Image (cartoon, rainbow, N blue to C red; front, top):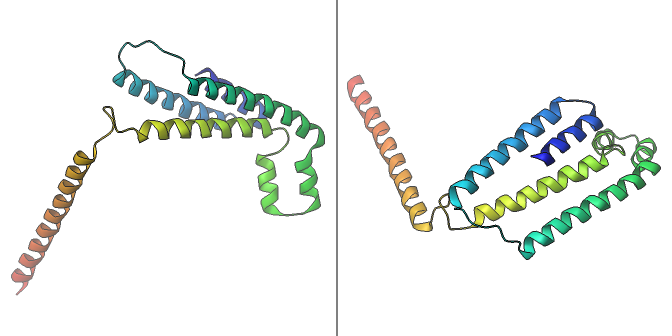
Length: 170
């Protein structure tokens, strides 16, 4: 929650628009609420233990933030994106340079890393075949068969109604 608030505040500072940061904050907070509900429904009162994966993830995030801060200072001094834009007059490059300009590059990298981390965590949650929110193959096959039967029944009723209308017309 704190990270989403900080990201929203940084977005307001860099873009000078509040609508984008509001949408970002609402999206992050709703995602956090959904993840909190999911985790509270499947986990009992268990103690939290540090794992090697968690430690490596935290180290990677911190090192990425440090490296982006260092790259940000370098890019801010040299303004390479504005120089590229003046060399070649291309509309696509101008549009991209507005997104990835020197004063917004840190925000761009941080949001990209945040999206990447959330993608990995969500794919790990979905990939498990255990827990209340994941169906097994047998249940999924049964549901698909019921859906298929339902569609066949609808087609049959439609075909039957069509034949009745044809008989009435004759």
